Amino acid sequence: MAEFVYPPVIRAALTAFKALDVRITIVGAEHVPATGGAVLVSNHISYLDFIFAGLGAFKDARRKTRFMAKDDVFRHRVSGPLMRGMRHIPVDRADGQPAYDAAVKALREGEVVGVFPEATISRSFTLKKFKTGAARMAADSGTPLLPVVLWGTQRMWTKGRPKNLTKRHVPVTIMIGEPIELTPQDRPVMVTRRLRAAMTEMLDRAQREYPDKPAGAEDSWWLPAHLGGTAPTLEVAEAEDEAEAAARAERRAQG
Image (cartoon, rainbow, N blue to C red):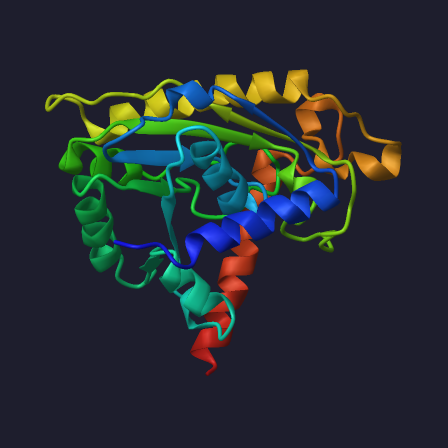
């Protein structure tokens, strides 16, 4: 099927990154399968993560990733046509089965499908609990899991902070791990634990090797608490997420 939307979107993103001198480092691009389906699994620290995770798969292997994203984005008058044109997969959080089926179908047809197993952005910039959907999709489609870790994207636009899409010279690390092949005997819960453990090691490496430091105390918000930053701990961040979800549910109930 001809691609009319994805290529110009990629070119526009690369042009913007060049203009802003976003210093992108891609590690492990050789792990991206040249052909066939794969479930690209990324951590989630920024609203821009799908762009950078997709870039990791595209840079050398020229694979276009079909990301699973909440259906609100597809209803937006600007982003909706773009998301549909790039053949991303809308997810209805009230009923995720159609999106799951669409993702498995795409994987069986040889597509790379992108998943954020934490479901929401991690305010702590550490890994939240993973949902098992990515492992189940890989098992049902007979495709590998491709772990991807991003670091630095939170400095441009993340939850609870003003976006700074004109910030210049930001280093961004895209780290791609070895594909995880599944066997029929593998249980999704155990595979998910294995995946999260691999990505924890990758994230630790990306953080340790990151070439930039906070400019001062006020700039340390993007660094996790365990590394001396002022980002909330995972426990505090989860409490904030729960409070936000409860408030959202109450607003829906009130109409």
